[in-house]
Image: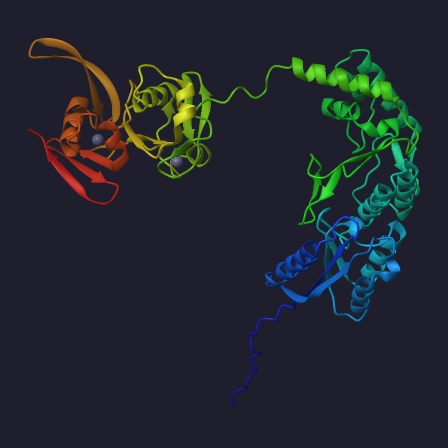
Length: 503
Ligand SMILES: [Zn+2]
Ligand SMILES: [Zn+2]
């Protein structure tokens, strides 16, 4: 008797939707209009309902109150109640300053929500409260929200100190020279002395690499346990932390929880005298100035872009065509071919002089004008036969590629009819009809008699395409040509084969 196995049904597990609510608040003083209020409500309900992974719970909105009078925040209290009853997983809100009454209240509320598994997303600051680093950042931000409304710097410091007490989550490393003492940063004496030495030498005019070298010789190691290099030295002489100043939001977290350097996306706050300085503010400013002057004196690392930069595409594979410096001159090459070789793309590199000549022709001028290219050309696509200029006015200009000496459209595509080996270019001085002349020929290394004049292949190709400048067309359309004594077989890339009979 056969045994019967029970086969479990493979039903995909239902993905549970997040229960999402929003909290909106319009203060009485600044946004009295009904429009502003309903606009916020509409905005949030639409935002939640259009996300397929979210379940719309509702928009909670308090109207006509300021943050300080929290007792009257009916909707806020209802929101927290619903959170307590498990009705909400995520709250969307405009900003930290709009959420709770003050720093303490904000922190308490967020911590409470965190404990019961409710995430709060602050749109303006782009922060999730449940993210690992969220709490410290929120503490800082809440401190600022508070300080901004009261506008006293003492309050800011109080808030920050309070923030420090929250603890140091991963990712907030003390700068070299300091350590986290559970409350704030304190100086590590040996490291502090090194920082002071670095500043002194730098201000005395010593280059960063020389300072790094000297420290390495003495076995001094940086924060990561390896000797400091010149870039670390330059980082130290431009880190404002050493003046006892704390920069808030020097880093921030993106929506995907990626830690990112703040380059102006969000406001940055500098809070002075937060911990014991290693460097005076004057010395720090001097070091910054020296660093700036040295950077300016450096030769320009990014040479000026050419008129073609960023607008040339490979017509074979669609990749960008980029500029390279070779000993024969500037050349434009297909990125895919450059990285993965001929198998990925058989683009024939183009010298800048050819590209310039083509642009001159396409724009119908007498000499190459870079400005004109910038003004009129939108995109250039190049394949082995043509250079196509897509102009900004919508027109297209197609220029046949030329093949200069030594570079032939026939290269690597001609094969011996006898042994199938690839033919190689050569030149011979022959005397035909009593006239001595140099001829370009293609010959097989294996079969001594197998050779063909370049002119003959050219003539055959010309008749094939009915076009005198045919090398480019050959390179673009023909996969290979097999040269026999009496004929040439042209194998097209698209599959057809055309035989050309020799005269
Ligand atoms: Zn390509
Ligand atoms: Zn051969």
